[in-house]
Structure formats: C-alpha cells, structure tokens
Image (cartoon, rainbow over all chains, first blue to last red; front, side, top):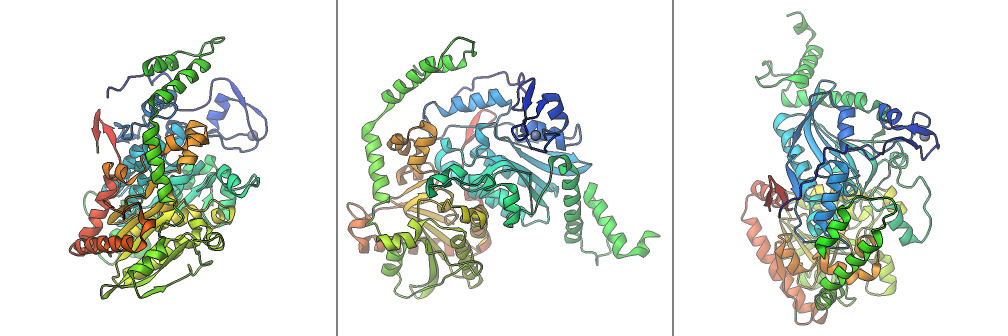
Length: 316
Length: 310
Ligand SMILES: [Zn+2]
C-alpha cells in the first residue's frame, strides 16, 4: 500500500493552538509562550497541561544529544479495520495533526550529561494507543538499553490498546512485558514517568513494571477508565478517582514529581541507581581497572564508589 | 465512494462550509454496502457460544480431567478471589499447577465468582501459585474465561493494573513449561494476564479479543447496536486468531459445541495438554524461555522502510 505523503513539518508536536488559552483548573488566561516557557505547567495553580512527545524531549534532553531509534517504523493495517472510517486514514490524520509517525518516539540522549535511552508517548496520536509499532519501538529501546547499559526512561501517556489492531494490540502487553523481563537480566535502571492519562494496556504492562515509578501531579492513572466504572457500578465517581495523588496514597507509585523538577530529580534517581549498577557490574573486591569501552556516568559512578570504599586509593 | 470520502475529509475546513453531514452520509452508506450480515451473524453465533451458560467452566474441566485436585486459595496479602481458581492437580502420574478464571453456574455462584471478573487478589493468587510451581518444577496450565478484569473503584485502589502487569511478568519469567487455553471468553488484559504462555491454545468456539464487541461498537461506531459488526471487524474467533498468528493452536469441540458434551470436550483438552507438555518438556528450560520471548517479540505487524513486516 502506498503511503500518501503528507507534509508533517508544518505542524509542531504540541496540541495547543496559537494565542491564549485559559487554565481549566484556575481559569487564568495564559499565552502559549508563557505556557511553553513554564513547561506547560500553569504558573498560577500548578495545573499540568498535556505535553506532546517532541516538546517533552526538548524539555528533558540536553540540546543536540537526541538520536532517534526506530523512527522509520509505521503502522500497517493487519485487520483491514474499517469502522466509521478506515484505520490507515486515522493514522494518516494523526500523522498530519501531530507531526509524529506513531504514538511513541524512542531515542538515545543525554540528560544533564547522563546517557539515557528515552521512550516518550504522545496522547494526541490516536490517544497514545499501543499498537504493533509502539510495542516494537519499546522492544528496541530495551535492546538499546541492554547493549549500551544506559538506563531506560519511559514517559507514558496512553488511553490503552489500539483497538484497530485487534488481538495484536492486546499482545503488545505481553511483548513489552517480555522486554522488561529481558531488561531485568542486566543491572540497568528502568524508570517510568506516568503522565495524564495513562490507562488500560500500557498501565497494565510496562508502565507499572519499572524499578521506580514516578507520576505527574493530577495525572489519571488506572486500568479501567472512570466512565467504564461508572457504567458498571451506576454511580458517579469522586473527582480524585485514579489520580496520581490517590495512586500514591494506595501505594501504586513511588512519588509525584512536578514537571518543573522532573529533569533534575530524574537524573538524581538514575544516578543513585547507577551507583548500584557499578557495583553489580564490577564487584568492589576485584581490584582491576575498569575495562575499556565503559565510559560516561557509569565509569564516574564506579570511581566514586571505589573512592568511597577504599579512601586510600584517592591519594594513589 | 471510499475515495470521495477521503477527498472530502482532506478538504480544509472553511467557515460556512458544512461537510460533516455529507461525510456522515457517505460513511454510513459505505457501512451498509460493506455489511455482510451473514458473516456478522456467523461470528456472533461464536460469541454467543463462547458465552454459553452451559459451557464447561474451569472447574468442570478440572474435575473431569484431574481426579486428584487440591485447591489452593488466597493471595497472602488481602483476600481470596473466587473469580480465579487454582491448585495442584494429579495428572498422568505427576503434578501440574492448574489456574483459571471461574464463572458461576447459578445466580448465587455467579455473584460470588463476580461473573469471572477478577480483582487484583485473583492475579496475585495466580502469581503465588505460578511461583510455587516454578519452585518445584511443576508445569503450569491456565484456562482463560473472563469478560475482563473487574472495573471497580476498590480493585483500582488495590492496583488492578499492577496486578495484571506483574502476572504477565511472572509468566514471562517462569522456568517451567506453560500452556494456556482459552475455553470461553478471552476478554482483554484480564484474560491475557494468564495467557503469556509457551503454548497458547483456543477451543474452536472460544473468542479472544482486545475489547468486548459491545464496548468497541460503542466507542468506534458510537452505537452499541453495532456489536455484531464490531465482533466481525475485531477478528476475534479462533480461526481469525490462528490466521493472525496470535495463538499456537485451535482445538476442535464436540459436535454443536463444548456445552453439548462436557466429557468429550475434557477428553480433547486432556489430549492437547499432553501433546503440548510432551513437546515443551523436550526443550531445555533456558531455550524454552528464549523461545517464549521470541514468540511474543514477533507479535505485531508493522512497516519498516516501506516494507510490511510480520
Ligand atoms: Zn491554573
């Protein structure tokens, strides 16, 4: 099938329109420059607006260090799915509207000079739904993390499985879980950041299998969405149902971090985990120099640990 | 007509020009043109068979297949979920761990079993039993029959999503052979949580789907009345799934369906389980795990540099 080429460079990755918009939480009128400069967090009330995948990368990554992985993967139409409109047309429209090729972008980058493999989902691409391409991209991100020993960070935003790929979309939950299990075989940190909203199949697979789970304030994080539950129990749910704060109270996430602090805190957490990684890779009692090829933050962490464990080495 | 529709959609939105009605009219005519009522009906018959109230459930198969079954209960954390049953079964001179969704036969049992919709406790019990099996080298056999994981506030608060993901991770991790069989309804993540296995089999008249046809119709067609069409479009029958490579095998049912003859159905399942275990146990555990990963890695269809890959 020939892919109709659409000019996707004209539209940016973000989902807001030019001009001002009012904050749904505090009604404050905010200009789009103001919002973008404040990482799409309302300066008045701290409400977190949704962020597109490209903009998220720009927020987190040291400039000029992003190298995309598997950027050439595109959805096929294995079921020849046609509801009110054909699936390929929905894809094409999402490509046009978001400037993205899929609901997840993956790449290697540096965050505060730390090497990281990053996977970022975008809710504005068909609701951030997980189909074959998202599953395969996640798998390749994991492979890269295993090969390089760079930590893996996944920024999640998803309404669940991509219905138009039927059972194959459901099986991406199994696929991404197998990837996490493979990653578990090496001492490489895996951290997820759950943003508004992360639900369904993504929430019930890799998003909740990380070593450390971070949530953004106010994010809806659940398996079944509020509407489905309301239909089942025939009652209106409280506003805080499934929110990040409720998830924290019930022990489902490690912490809630404001987007304004995310970059710093992420690097802090990864750095602490990598301190452990260095120990696991090269036990302290082996007095050998680090093998060639190891570099960057990992080597530094290793040196720090050696210095800590054996202060006399510092003078030598 | 399809082309005309695409063209209409491509037109830039101009003020004062209303294309919405035109687009809706054409897409509805397209649906009617493409509708194959005979096929929809045939697929819907399968959906109804998969949900048939007299169809054998997990405990029916267990009692017919394994004379000595010891049920193990509880998640050691919060409670025991009757929507998932599991335990040790004597099987051809050895032990296997059997775990499955359980629906209720009469009104009281249906309520107690929550219509086969597990809460997190159910998935945690399943994990506990699978880990126990792994410790003693006991193969794991799961039976899938659920409309889905229970959508409730308390279930969410106790971590429904994490319970499912960790059940998946537990199955990915096992060193023992695993066989999963969809016996009725394979509904979404709540079903998959017990189906990340070395061999995934389906009974002929069972279904396995990312979403129920009713919900899919409500979301995508914006009309719950289109459930028959949604069922056909989702490709959720056993023959669809084997074609898509989503399952490893389909087991024939007794004439008219498994509900007509429970004993014969159990006999078929027993033979298939024996064949699968014989095959799997010939493989080294490490290789078996790798093959499991590779199998699920291959799940999906995408295009890379313009080529469609399976
Ligand atoms: Zn505000």
